[in-house]
Image 1: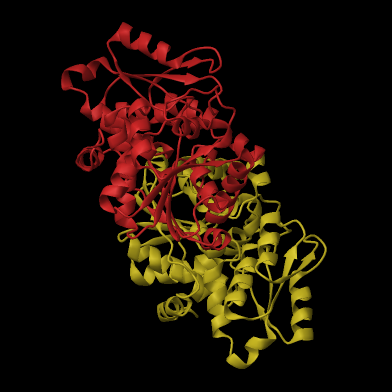
Image 2: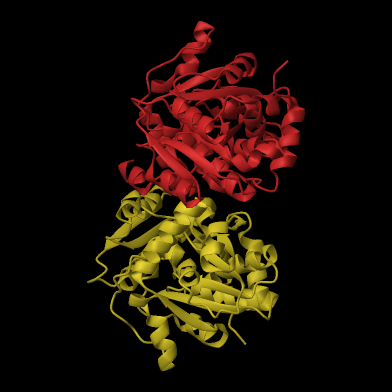
Length: 316
Length: 316
């Protein structure tokens, strides 16, 4: 029994419908030919705020009791979550403060501010964003919006796979990028409830393998702040709830190199004409570089985000 | 009476269905807010080959008499047309030779070769691509595929607006980039046949205003090879058929600066997450920079292509 059920995810889908978009799916002949499978991309890069994060953030904010809403929310995030909290807060008329690393992509910092949120930057290698966030929450009475390890966030994130399973019936596998685990745990619950035969895989950068190590050890371990180009997947330790769900439901966690992430990001952008950020291309990288069992022919891949600087594109 | 009718365009739509894709439409809240209109993007950047050109090319190749097909085809183009001819030829099993400028984006040269076509490069400031193409055709017996000024090309290109009018009923205006005029003339015929009230606009770079000058003068004039970033719109003279159609049906030709093209390309990519090339963003630039009459509220814009180098993106 998981702490989040398919009913929670269906309820979240109804709740967030006025804020989050139903994103399209897309196919690429070039990608299919290159990897030898039938791949269905779920385009969360086209989501409001440019990433799947609005799903969890809006479900969370809409679940806060009415009396607490005027005091606002505070979030900490490597970027896309912050932007999602800012957008959801603006739509719902709530004040928002976001704690973001000072080396987050400029586009993410600017977009968060443009959405009317206060941004507090911190040094990812020295400060604790959790501590800063908690201090702000204690001072202002704002509700802390965790980036992934909360059932409201997981239920919201799961609405993405719920849509995909309805848009692309009969998938053999679902491949999802893995940072904190909110998207993967929600996706696994939704996908396996709709299609019990589907096999669900998480994908981490080799240098950010906190989940792979934790699963092998059977307990949550912490790694040093990982230097991956996939800035959305730089979490250092699995969440408690997300780890439990992923351990129970997910087939395996696959690893991809920085070079594989870079090449896949370029390939997806230049062939599909969909802008995808490195973090968002990690799932596609696992498929492109043959990390999946060969018998899985029809594969869903979540392109989880598209917030990439022109400087980052140039560096690719 | 135009030389191409809506029936020709409907016949082309049926003919090319196995080769060209029906592309989606897309909306952007950011774009609408910034320009104060309701804009529907027709995503030809997601078309096979990354641009609308496959529509005209495949309609042309499928209209060549059976007996001439084994001798193949030869085309000359600034890039997207060449790629489209190569793809259509490969699908139909016909040999293809393409004459392309030596300063065309690398991605376009490579993609054309990857599609199995022979590429002959020329110096855009010294040689005549028409002459080189005609020589190859004379030597090999191949059929010359003109880039725009032919009724089969125009009818094929017009299928794009035909789809759009069905996907987005009730448009006040349709805005189309203008190089040789194949897309604009076909679009005008299709759009006004389906929705007689729609006003159709062409958009040229200020530095590539051969149509604007020609329309003012009442005859086709030739300009020097224009130094615009919109490499797909570097034609120097209107076509004969396309000029006649555009003169009759199109409301006005609007001009946009190089800076407006660059800014719009960046804005569209970073906000919609759809990769668009500068040539493909010229129509959007006219809308974003307020060149349309204010009373036109619901506007269709063709994002005509998405074949852009990472180097070009970096330069933006």
